[in-house]
Amino acid sequence: MSSILSPSVEAVIAANVARIRQRIADACARAGRDPAEVVLVAVTKGKSLAAVAALARAGVFDIGENRVQEGEAKRRAAELAGLAGLRWHLVGHLQRNKAARALRTFHVLHGIDSAAALEALARRATEPVPVFLEVNVAGEPSKHGCAPEALPTLVETARRLPAIRLEGLMTVAPVADDPEDVRPVFRELRPLAQEFGLTKLSMGMSGDFEVAIEEGATHVRLGRALFEGAIP
Ligand SMILES: *Cc1c(COP(=O)(O)O)cnc(C)c1O
Image (cartoon, rainbow, N blue to C red; front, side):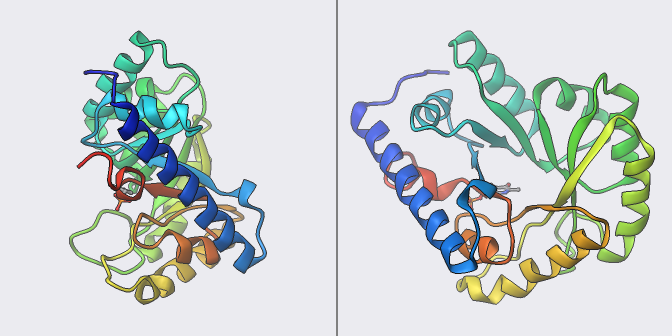
């Protein structure tokens, strides 16, 4: 993996980061929130190590990948290139048989949606691992995530396992042309989390992150918006 982008491409990424930080701040202002409460997770799936390096130089240190294998390769390459201080987030679904590898690569796991996955992690973890439980709020059959009705049991399982540090809930909203159309999905996640005393919400992507922040997102997962005009 190459670790070099042209200066002009780097400049576009840095400008994108600045613009997104401003949009995050504006959304927080509308909601009466402190922007320091919102973590920007840059999703770099399909992008090279050079993209990760450019993001780090622009001050983005939370890096998201949706596949264990790609995350593994990228983290290893980042370390070889001397890129330190990154926090790696698995934002995609975790297959049980990849639990050990996921633990070695990622600091935070966002896509956990079954007791089996929690137990597989707990068997392998050597220290408590921060986890977001994925909820399929909209009930889309094509999506991962547990049904809201399954959440009480899943939370109970997570809390019974000392190796799991339950952080909050995560959701992926349906694709929509107008982000207002998915506001109700985001709006449902916060009370679900509050029911269990959870305060962190991983929700919002390039097309809908401002609405997600207005509805309480603490972690937005952005890919396309960061690379617009820079990397296809
Ligand atoms: C790819 C991906 C994102 C980022 O999506 P963009 O639309 O590119 O911002 C966020 N979350 C998950 C789970 C993803 O797979």
